[in-house]
Length: 215
Image (cartoon, rainbow, N blue to C red):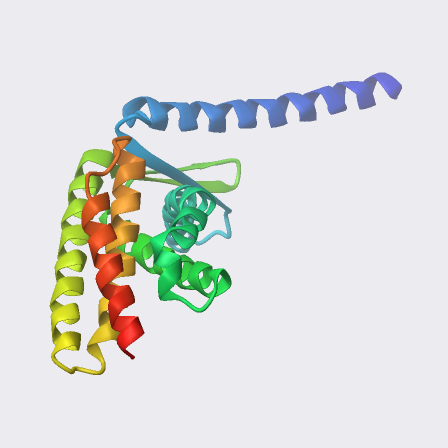
């Protein structure tokens, strides 16, 4: 009886280890096909319910959220404090307000960014449904660069409108500025190359501070 129990326990353990190894192997194959130096990769997993189409959609959402988490965590940890201790802090009542505003912009811009992610694989193993999402870094860097420039231009346009008496424009200029900075930081983080836009942002900050002093 004891021997039978030991054999059963060993069998269960081997089954678990085999399943884990199989899932790990599938993970490895995704990372081999989409190397981390060229892609952001997210893998989502959810317990199967018997409705594979629904489970697949849930796994896809989780895979994309995994990509988002990689970006959001780094931006919030490495960027928000820096932005709110520099010139940007002058645009807000206090550091807490600055942090809250930039964190909100990080959430919005990363969600926009995720629209460019692609689901590249699904698989099911031992009652778990998996999905893999990828984001080509080169494409993402170009898109973020375009969005940063577009938001910077909107900032300039609204600064000019505010100077001419448009009461809503100053607020719109500040929102566009925060987006421009955040897009640029996201691009810098993915590209691994220091941005050249710091002088431009410094000038925009000065103009926005002047608008605030006029109010």
